[in-house]
Amino acid sequence: MGHTMKWGTLPPKRPYLWLSQLLVLAGLFHFCSGIIPKSVTKRVKEAVVLSCDYNTSTEELTSLRIYWQKDSEMVLAVLLGKVQVWPKYENRTITDITNNPCIVILALRLSDSGTYTCVIQKPETGTYKVEHLTKVRLMIRADFPVPTINDLGNPFPNIRRVICSTSGGFPKPHLSWLENGEELNATNTTLSQDPETELFTISSELDFNMTSNHSFLCLVKYGDLTVSQTFQWKTPKPTPSANQHLPWTITITVSACGIAVIIAVTVTCLTCRNAARWRQRRRNEENMVIERYSLST
Ligand SMILES: *[C@@H]1O[C@H](CO)[C@@H](O)[C@H](O)[C@H]1NC(C)=O
Ligand SMILES: *[C@@H]1O[C@H](CO)[C@@H](O)[C@H](O)[C@H]1NC(C)=O
Ligand SMILES: *[C@@H]1O[C@H](CO)[C@@H](O)[C@H](O)[C@H]1NC(C)=O
Ligand SMILES: *[C@@H]1O[C@H](CO)[C@@H](O)[C@H](O)[C@H]1NC(C)=O
Ligand SMILES: *[C@@H]1O[C@H](CO)[C@@H](O)[C@H](O)[C@H]1NC(C)=O
Ligand SMILES: *[C@@H]1O[C@H](CO)[C@@H](O)[C@H](O)[C@H]1NC(C)=O
Image (tube, rainbow, N blue to C red):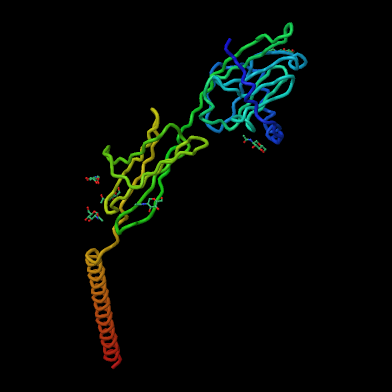
């Protein structure tokens, strides 16, 4: 088997200051004794547990050599119970050497995808013989979150500017603005890549005329995947203009005048009628007095 161990590349010894990490992740180890998938898919920044799939006693383990390789590069080695971690995995890879040996890789990067091999060698008549070998394929995904669209205000009168952005995905994305299926001219499209995580960030601005309604689609394509966000623009409700004021004023004025006239007429009529009635009563009373007077005489 072509598992050559590159002992010349052993990293210089560094103090193991990641005890806290160890404690936090101690809980992950119970997975080691579980079922081992031959292919694992994880997302960037997540943690993965890769098991050797070899059950043995802790005593026997101290006499074994355990090597973890990714494709052709070294990851970790356990020799006589001592753990060596290679620089690319340093401070984010821990191992469990009880019962079923496994490794935990934290803060996964895109570059961590590949086939991991665990080799266990057993001492036998002065040499070491391969006792066990396991391969696990690790795939790392980096999905872009749904883009966000933010308002950047008015760069010019009646022109609104919005920005669409998303970050933390891979591979290299392409962003486009669409309205009714037609691509629009975006401004200031920026693309950047984090040198460490290799993840991309993309943003793009769009200017539009505020005087009409719009429905924009911000579409981000990467690999064979897409994420998108829509942005709706409704023209603000028209403010009442002078032309629209006039009919209202007239209506109110006319109505007010009409009501006033009606009230005036009613009041006048009532007053006249009451006056007439009063005069009538007066006349009747006078007549009665005259009648009584004439009767008495
Ligand atoms: C692993 O080994 C231990 C003791 O060596 C044993 O108790 C346990 O049942 C074994 N587990 C499996 C899954 O074989
Ligand atoms: C690992 O951590 C130690 C202590 O914090 C630090 O000195 C060392 O540079 C780190 N190694 C890597 C590869 O980041
Ligand atoms: C986009 O820009 C091109 C060239 O600058 C121009 O010809 C085209 O009309 C623009 N399209 C829109 C929708 O503004
Ligand atoms: C492009 O964006 C940068 C920063 O986001 C800003 O400073 C610059 O003014 C923008 N340019 C245009 C033409 O909008
Ligand atoms: C916005 O659209 C209206 C109506 O289509 C037009 O009259 C106006 O000139 C446009 N404004 C700008 C700044 O393009
Ligand atoms: C914009 O949409 C609103 C609500 O759907 C509607 O009332 C208004 O008339 C529309 N304006 C234009 C200019 O189409």
